[in-house]
Every structure is written in C-alpha cells, then in structure tokens.
Length: 142
Image (tube, rainbow, N blue to C red; front, side, top):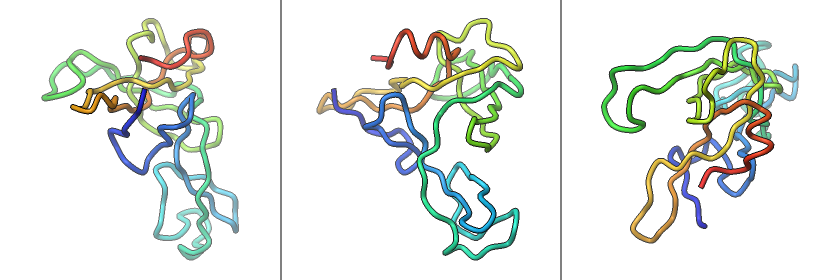
C-alpha cells in the first residue's frame, strides 16, 4: 500500500516502523526534531553545522493531555503526549487507539496511523505512539 505523509518532510513514510527526520549539531551533538535549520540552540553553531539524521520514533511518556474539543481529524477525544525520545528531543505526539492505559514513564514507539485515503488509494499517514510492546507485536497500522 502506498503511503503519503500527512506532514511532508517530518518523517519517512517508507520506513516501518516510522522514522522521524531530525537534525543534529556537528559541534555539540544535540539532536532536534522537528528539524532545525537556523543554527544550534545549545552551542550557537551556525546553521550549516546542523546535519540531517534519522531519529527513532521511540521514547518515554513525559506528560499526557486528553483533547475533548477539536475541529477536524482526529475525532475527539484523543490524547496528546509529550515524549522524551530515546535519541534526546522532547516532542509532542498523538497516542494511537491501542494506547489505552499508557501513563507517565511508560515506553512508547510509533506505528503508522492512517488519517485519510486519497482518490488513488494512497494512505495519508502520520506516526501515532503506542506502548512499545504493542508496537513490536502488532506492526504497522493499516
């Protein structure tokens, strides 16, 4: 099945499980997601010192918020989590439907969530986080 990114440039839709497109500072090693292009916030290195790198979409839940009022996709209620990625950055991501019971401190990994289907049959996808055990045993969302 062909995949199209819901947010182009942020992740590799060919990877399974999802891989995030990040940057790293060649001076101090700090990792950024989403990719940073204005220079390193940690050491002040110039923008040309930031290099593109793949960032594993796995980490530990830092905080959670359930959304009850929202227009569009996904339908409410859904949960947003702050996740400290194993590679360093703290990001916000949507928890997948298989993430019931996920709490602060739990390990999570991304799987593909289908947000729409295009006329040509391509699935519009974005990463959604689920418990690491569920991600490794269920594979990609379809």
